[in-house]
Image (tube, rainbow, N blue to C red):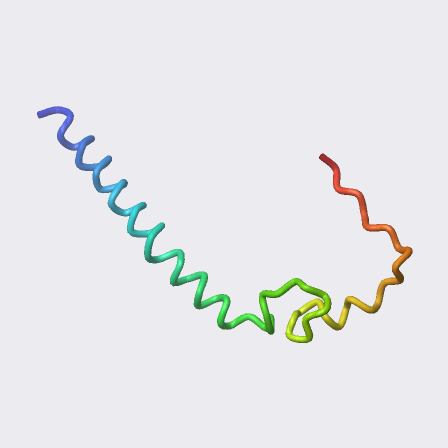
Length: 70
């Protein structure tokens, strides 16, 4: 009898987190993706529909890319 409230809280949390992960977050991501100004998800610099197509020609080929700390 003493652990029943804890059990209900755990089960309720599992149900809520499952619902949020499977339904709410994908719907929110889709809504935000549709509102963004990105023309295409493609990162191919040769793809004219890509959001990086115009910026691809701005860097000379000899420009080194910045190092990423690991």
